[in-house]
Length: 101
Ligand SMILES: [Zn+2]
Image (cartoon, rainbow, N blue to C red; front, side, top):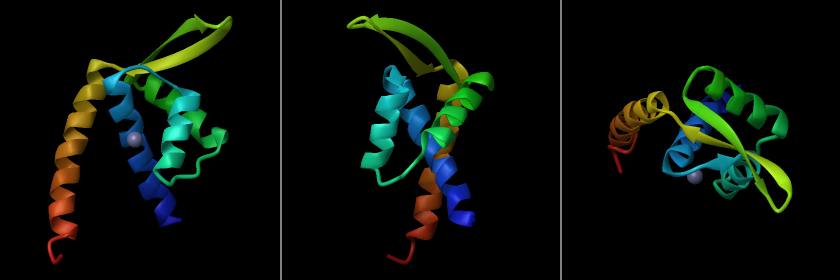
């Protein structure tokens, strides 16, 4: 359905935004998206993260916290540029779709 297509795009913007401000791990981003009202299964979230990484927008690393390995992601230069472009488009879109209000 169309909403799902839109939301997947919004979700990618959320991921890039948070990954450009610091490192994020899958669990954190899942919680963050829930907070924003998206219900996203791990079966959608993780492939999305992997695709963003494979396409060069995110890079990942791992660290050990309290004896557990945590995989984290952060935005690459490409990712930051894509986010910048998205921000401009979002600003423009908002001024258009909320024009009447
Ligand atoms: Zn967010």
